Image (cartoon, rainbow, N blue to C red):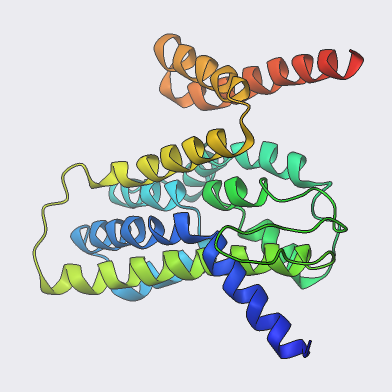
Length: 246
């Protein structure tokens, strides 16, 4: 099979595999663009943040930080706390990212919540075939690194496109933006449910959800996220070790 046909087939597979994000990211990016315009910022700043920062929730939070006039170090600390969950993502993806070079660096940069949800569903070995819903034949062994790169790249394209359209639309048409910030949370809930049905191991999701609920109830908001992640990781590690010892 000619190389260019293989590349086209891989791109088509990545598009189909990333459809859940395609259905959500443009809308959420649109919401971000609207909020930026509502706050009085130019469209090019929306584009710059979506390309260079690309942090989803971090970008939404940045709007409030800008408006409050916080200092650079304070803003950096807030972003560190908000995005600290990516440390857990990175640790869990070490064995999957066996490739190197630009692809690996970009996949690390583009590891959003939704991208992680998709990539973590892929086979853990480069030698395994990848079955994509909607494709008659699986992606042959050896194509996982390119596939992961394409998914990461496409997801950012979806986000950038939505945010840019939102920024332009906000300058032309007045919108009510009440409640629009919940869009990002809604997308991640949908992806979580899809993962639960796909891997058929719902226990780990409930183990993660319980500490999150308890942390929100009993801890200050600035500590709840990190505490929930730490507790969920600890409990999951203990259960994983017990399962391996059986």
